[in-house]
Image (cartoon, rainbow, N blue to C red; front, side, top):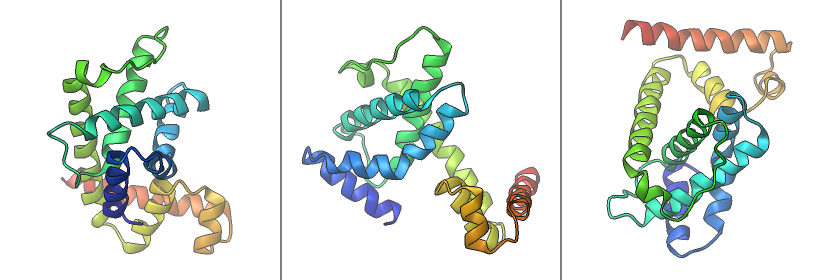
Length: 182
């Protein structure tokens, strides 16, 4: 299922107050939030709480007059999740509990986080489009589909995990070189 299809189905399901959209978004995008929270002093429970709060905010945003259904929902969900987690880290004793008016009270900050996330992903996609097709596939499997190194080794027929990690490093280096040139 491509992003456009996922977006369209999720938006349609949300607008029908159908819970299927939550499941689809959780399956497709929770990995990004989990990775970010775990990489930034959080645990799995924190990641789940932040992601659920992000989905509630997204739900409210879908009914905002300015929402464009063709925008990538991954950008919205990850942007909101990152914003919530960073806010929680800034206020270490802060317990994330989203009240109904959270989105409206923090609309500008959330929208800025979403724009920053969108800019980041747009730039990253431009860089990825310039690397070899093998590296494009590898990067997508590792970072977008959250495949572990054993799955990468098996899929690409690398003789060892070490070889798979070396190839990952070479692909990331291709991106870094392109980024430096720009």
